[in-house]
Length: 426
Image (cartoon, rainbow, N blue to C red; front, side, top):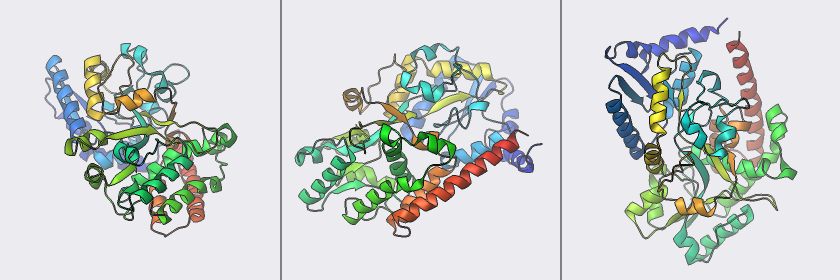
């Protein structure tokens, strides 16, 4: 029997944009493809809209209805999954297999899959060969940095956490505190969540002597081993290696501050480099892989797919949805989207002229590891990580207390996820 709450959620769908009621009122002469995406910037959305319009022109019998719910995306999709009434096409935003897998049509027979970057196989394919989604681009997250600052102070791009902290200290000392070594936009808690999530992989996964995969997956992980990241962040704060307004600073400040040569490192990637260049072409922004933590380990990219298009398997327009995916996967169109998002294409036959192309070429042999929370943490832990970072920086909790809180929430959310899974299978 379905959980009673599902009935309530079904009613909510009547007022959501792009739902069944809205579809029925669409022009009866055309089939309407409803698409939900997590694209966030104006340039990304503008390019997507332009390509959708080109598709409509080419397919006169199909209308494309694009939706960008922003911060409401996840909650909206949870509601729709609970009622099994999803958009015809939707963005799996890193959860193609784990969260959305049972709802997606298999795309393995599409031509573009032959050119899928092998780095994405483990994220978008299962052992039997099912392809869960078309990746519009792929993320390779590391540290964005001001090349001018490192050149001025004779600092090589750091490859280890020790080198990174040493670089931060050098920048603070030689700039006499005028430059923020490591900048956080902590008003948006995702800034701290990104720190924890990104550095958790070199701390707990990539080094064979410190591999906690099994314990994280089976729920026996000892969260005291996570305290290192909180201790490191707190020490940076005490030494004023991060911005003093780390808890209240907003993402909207980043571009201007970087363009003014007031920031050395940050975790923001994407279009940062090109946005800064538009304001001050003399400031050169680069990106490097995430530094290693344990001795003998190597730097890594953290990533996987960034934006995707998955087709809902029960959509009445699966054929048309696949036609739209095939259109977006054409090399010329895939190139446009990669360049609009300033991220590499997911297809090996597409060479995009993106801002960080030289950096990605230089570090082309560096391994890409999936986002930590997508593989090893229960749904909901991202928000917990972000709040924990805010509480640490605001001196509300100590590093040890942070680890205890994370362990409690980890167990609670795992249990909640297991319970919901059992209910959905009844």
